[in-house]
Amino acid sequence: MMDAMDAMEAGESSAPGQSAIAVDIGGTNTRVALVGPSLVPGVGQTVLEAAPTFATEQEYPTQMARLAAAVTAGLRLAERRGPGQPRGVGVALGGRIARDGACVLAAPNLRDYEGRPFVQDLSAQCGGLPVRLAHDAVCGLLAERRYGALVSVERCAYVTLSTGTGCAVHLGAADGSAGVTLSIELGHQLLDHNPRVCLCGQVGCLETYTGGRQLALRYGQPIESLPAAESLDLWRDFAAKLSIGLVNLAHLTRVERVAIGGAIALNRPGLLDALRVAVAERLRGAHLELVAASLGAQAPLIGAATLLATPENELLH
Ligand SMILES: [Zn+2]
Image 1 (spheres, helix red, strand yellow):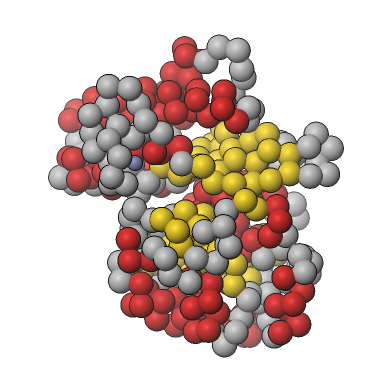
Image 2: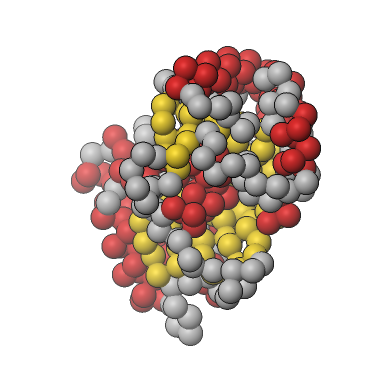
């Protein structure tokens, strides 16, 4: 076990055919899966087996105990499937990760996780198994760049529209020789004349118009269950406000293609076209291509597994 830990700390990639336990902790639900090479040619890594989704525990110690049980079950499953032990546990989390890549710095939807040594705690609960942690949008981006809608795009972003509004950006050299991936707070940029108070404590954040949790609190029910006639204004504002955020994203980072993922995007196929129209009306002096995240709901899980083969110095937490 220590050999694997030492190799990861040295930035070495694991064997590409090896499986991994992937964990996706959202503000609402947590998913755990065994991810490994697909038998379908050209697909790359895929979810081999998924454990039952469970509601994310707001209390950190309770969540840690549930994760340890799920990872242990995943290890038993991997043993039955063979060949070989998973290379470790990759975790996608809907929150900002500290610079050390090991602690949760800020998570407005998971307050009890803030300041916790997540990597150390989970590894200790799982017999010293290697654990890597990143923002869920970073994991989505890693998956889409390696296997999905962002393959070979050196200036790109992944936006997740879900409980919150997350984003990760990759900026790389044209020849692919160097690059960096980082999460940015797309949802907590301020919009002029927006008086709404965000769950993060700021006044005027974009996410007050686009975050699933904030909209559910505003409307008294999950937005997917709102009758169509009552939600017209919501979706018009959603696309209009998010398009401002995307235009800012293009100008501030110079990304050229954005993959849109997350539960809200997956459940509302017409949203992508509305965003394309709204962005085209506003954007001048730059080009921004909006595409659907092609790995769908699997993107954060596959990206979490990909984390274990990603050198830590390519990620800027
Ligand atoms: Zn905010």
